[in-house]
Every structure is written in structure tokens, then in C-alpha cells.
Length: 273
Ligand code: KIV
Image (cartoon, rainbow, N blue to C red; front, side):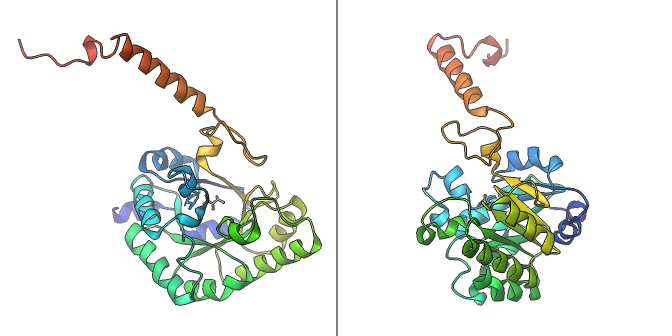
């Protein structure tokens, strides 16, 4: 990327400064062509580890590797001109120690050219977040529902209904904010708690299944484009229905091939006469 391209991009500090101005627009992106389409409309593109399920058909994000995140981070960076690009640190790449986290976060920044990393965790990750930020790595925190912990938390359900759960999420949000994160993703959390956290922290909250009270919203692009017609969680809105559109296109192609209607003369090369 050219130096000119880089200076046009929205920085993590600019995202932080957007709190209280207007809602922040964010979506996930994993590939160059989709990043190109999303970039003009989004403040922040997240190369989420949801790519494990969305692109690779994995059961959860636990199997996602550094190599996958770096390859897709590089692909997204090739399609972006203005959005801030944040890459998820995958499960097992940062939980062991703050040194391990720094090593892998630095590798992501060096090898992709992206603007920062996201990592899941609350109080237990605060020391790591402070370690990364003080050494030059912008960190996007992630509290509430944490998909990388699905094997210990037992599933995907919205959180914060009991006092105990709400207190824990409150403490997590405070700890990650105080550690120096530039923004905080809140996932799968009841509205009153997301509203309270948003009012109590001085960095932007970006919600997914965490109500309109957050400072911004993020969705998995493939979800909001209606690419998965078999499953739609409550917090997702389909802004398009691409699954049936794709099915119809492929059916029409198959019929044309079988009937020898495709390729036609206009798609066929002839020798020079
Ligand atoms: O990996 C991901 O897509 C996420 C979502 C919660 C946005 O972190």
C-alpha cells in the first residue's frame, strides 16, 4: 500500500474520538472483493475469527489459526482505502502470556499492515491489553458473550440478566477500558447493561446483539447479506437475501449448460478469418 493510501485511512484514535458524535458503522470482512464493497460505507472493518465458521465451515472459532487470520487480514487490506482494519487474535494466540500476545499481535500488524487487533476477555486480559497498548499495539476489546470461551461457558446465549453476570460484564468493561483499549465490542448482552456500560466508559462501545444503546454496531457481513438462509439469530437483520439469489443463478446456469444454451456464440472464441 502507498503512503498516500495509508494516510487516508481512519485510525484507531479517530474511531475512539467518534464517541458521542455519530454511530460507528462496522462489518466483518474476510476477502479483497468484499472489503472493496464495504470500505466506502464502513468506519471499521473487522477481520473476525468468525471466518472459521463463515468461510471454513468450522463448528466454532476455536480452530482458527494465526495463518488464517494473517492470510485474510492481508486480503482485506488489499481492498481497503479508508476504513480502519482490525484483525482478531485467534484462540490460543494470546491467552498464555502477555509476551505471547505481543509476539502474535506484532506479527499481525507487520504481516498484514492492519491498524490493530481485537482480543476477547475482561479482567483476566487487562494486564495483557495494557502491555500491548504501552508497546504500540492498538487494542479493540471484546466483552459480554465471548465465542472463544464456548467450551467453558457452554454455548451462545445473551448475557447480563442475573446480577452476578451483569456485575462480571461491568467489571470486564471497566478493566479493558482502563487498560487502554481504543474501543470495546459488546456481544450478546441485554440492553440496560449495554446502555449503562456505554454511558460509563469513555471509549466507544460497538455492539452485536447488544442493543441500539451502543456507540456503534457491527454484524457479520454474510449474516446481514442473507447468505445463510437456514439460521437467523434475533440480533441479525437481513439487508439482502443473497442465498436464494445465488441458488437461482446457479440453477439457471445448470439448466443452460445442460440445454447447451451456454456458452453462446458471444462467449466463444473463433479463429481469425
Ligand atoms: O469474529 C467476529 O466476527 C466477531 C463478531 C462478534 C463481530 O468478533
